[in-house]
Amino acid sequence: MDARSKTGVSIRSATKRYGAVVGLDDVSLDIAPGEFVSLLGPSGSGKTTLLGILGGFVKPTSGSVWVGERDITFEPPHKRDIGIVFQNYALFPHMTVGENVAFPLRARRLPKGGWAAKVADALAMVELSGYENRGIAQLSGGQRQRVALARAIVFEPQLILMDEPLSALDKQLRENMQIELRRLHRKLGATIVYVTHDQREALTMSDRVAVMRNGRLVQIDAPERLYDRPCDRFVASFIGEATLLNVARAGDSAVKLGDAVLHTAHPLPRGEELLLAVQTEKLRIDDNADEQADGGGLNGVNRLRCRVTEVLYQGESLRVFATLADGTAISLRQPGSHHARTRIPPPGNDMTVVIDPQDTIVVAA
Ligand code: ADP
Ligand code: MG
Image (cartoon, rainbow, N blue to C red; front, top):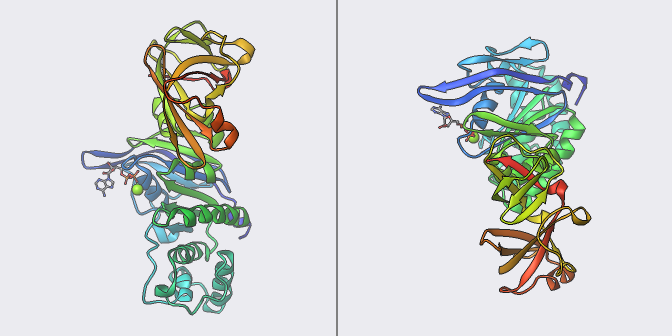
């Protein structure tokens, strides 16, 4: 809402032990002012713990938290100037919408004269103008979530933390709210740290996505980069819909998959055990390649002969399962358009699929 929002936040070597369990394992992370960063990872990977350390309701066992130049590691939550939104909204059911949204102003003992205008501004921001006197019970799930948002932004915090705020909503509403949150982020200019276990949501909303596993930060990158260049097997399998295939090194920029040599536009990782990570939508059916042999580089693409085993119609797209000559299973996605569908041979028939060397991603096994 104002220029004060322009403060970044840093975590330095934060570790959190819960008895014998390591909830967070030596995580460092710099978030730029105004950035939208998602923490993405499976259940138990440490997302909520990291968010809790940022918010002040989890004390790190070691390490520190900084907002701008200020060490806030031991500052209590209410002193932190941080807005928080949880999955279950945590609204006060006996208060009106207006009273709920005004709560942080009361808690911060801001002058009462200014409350009404601030509440009205915050409600306008989430497109609930005029809802001040409604009861919480009268609201839909999406409206409640927006009230929770209004409450988090009403005191114009520099930093907003959200822990799976949309996971209780149905798909349609969730997708609408994702768009609204992006819009709100642009409007507020605040720094947002957003926890989700939904990779699609993280890719949709974020400037950068931090992938977590077992309390560690595995990779932090812009969505496209994360998708195109996963740093390891875990990220490759967690982002998108990839098939991971064992391959052998075949020179500096090529791997062998069965008898086929595939070229990659990227440096190969170290080590002898390698996996080719193929996102299903990066494989394309080649219509006019019957006479081509398996292998790479021709016309800038890699070719693979395979036999169709199953075609699943899934609405907007089709999933095609196939096997390579050595029996290795692969799968690809084709658009649901009539044109694309006519190009898929029926099960039992052979086809050639192609993959661009730019899309040929190899990770360590
Ligand atoms: P996520 O939000 O990614 O699901 P959490 O940060 O909640 O992960 O948990 C990370 C790890 O720490 C898990 O193994 C979890 O069981 C453990 N943990 C989290 N909070 C506590 C707690 N209060 N007491 C004991 N263990 C905890
Ligand atoms: Mg959690």
